[in-house]
Image 1: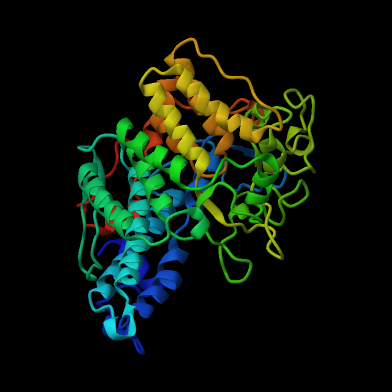
Image 2: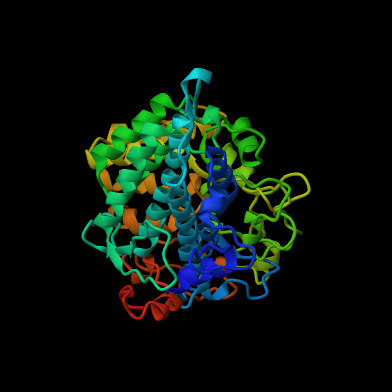
Length: 488
């Protein structure tokens, strides 16, 4: 059995072939539609997370610099040291396979449940039953999209090697090889089609912390843009823009949205309530609080900070007002403590200063997908229009329409706007991987982002490290049926 499923069995009691004292089998756990709903809310949704992506991406790329309270946290990764034993790869791999396993348990349990249909009393649980399955399958599709994007060398190539395809609850001795991306995407498309046909909530207004039809369409658009299937990506992204019932958030709403005060333009977010032992996303960068004296072991990367112009609400939303700007940061010998740019995109809430909901899909992503589709068509004015839509929403004044000399310049502006808009959301690594060659862009750090100014500030956008290694523990436990990615 692989380490993945050993880990799930030991930490989550998910391995069905291990009988423990007091354990309830599926026949007892899943008897009614209400049981399925309870498991969906309590057993599936809590395992949806982007924390691993956020943590890895911010440190490895160009979103953070070494903070004043860094005692060695993340420095190896920050210096591009990535190998099969790196914990970040294992964390991301296990996080999504744990979610997949939970969904598979839900689907297996559902086979034991027959929805109540009582015409005489106007009771019909069929739609609710199908909706539960739809939500689960959409979340499984999300997990697989994330896994392929990080662990496949080319997420746009259906014949490239993908990840393990697991659509059952495995027995303890089962082992799974990696399969092609095409096989993974076939399951993803089936899951999304089922979800689209059966999910009951239609728009984010009906509950953006749960799967809705708009979330399914948005996730489908993301999947197709990652595969460079531009016509299908455009179709689904436009569907969301037209039908989701939300608009790009103005500056005052945008800031409240990140503090969990309002849904704004969120299409799907992962709930992280104040109570409970949830992970704290801002602990990726801080020990205590999201300000200059809150124990920041990472702060915002200087080149990223320099991109936010005066009047851009993202500057005041993403950087805490306690920031310390050193005008001579490039020549100062004390820049680590005198040029401190505290990340405040996740400002905390209530008595949890480092905890916020994880925003997985927002409307701005759909506009950016449409911009990519326009760039692919050579429609430079179309690209400019979509970029302007986002800039107009983020600034307090109307912004000029961009002009591009050629399509490479358009791709570069798409990457620029994605860099500013999706900072600290776990996108930058994947964006460089899939768009870097089109835009002639890669990691862009300032020399002050490290303790040593002479260290490399970038790697090639074609570097093998833009594909994560399969965790070594997983390969060792698989009996070598899992193939490692090149150069690891």
